[in-house]
Image (tube, rainbow, N blue to C red):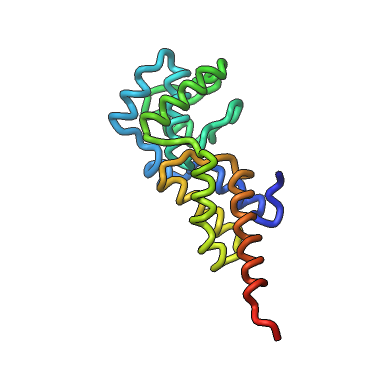
Length: 184
């Protein structure tokens, strides 16, 4: 489903992208000893770097690195440097999709993250309604949902899922506004 009318293309890309500026990378992607212990359990440099990048993606922006998706070069270099690896090692990561999926599950468990369920989706939609009643700005609403998902330690779903949630709240809020308008 296209995100027309809700987000501009630059906004969509920004919401989905990991941090690539130095300050953002240091804030979100500096590996702590617990991270390094998890990473160093992997066999092979490509798996260590790939696992570390997946860990970073799940920390921020809070989503899964998709199969075939290439992380930004700056992020790959930043993480690889911490592991004393060459950034090019990432090219060999995830040749087996099963490895990538196993890594995602292990990282989610280690970070205390949960996948979004239907009941959680309904909770988020209900939580969003007061904000949707206050503003119709799609960017503000999407940012609010993403932040709430991170606060609740829920893995961020693809943007089209968030789009549906936000649009449904906008429609409901607009309907309520029309319903309760005073007639002239």
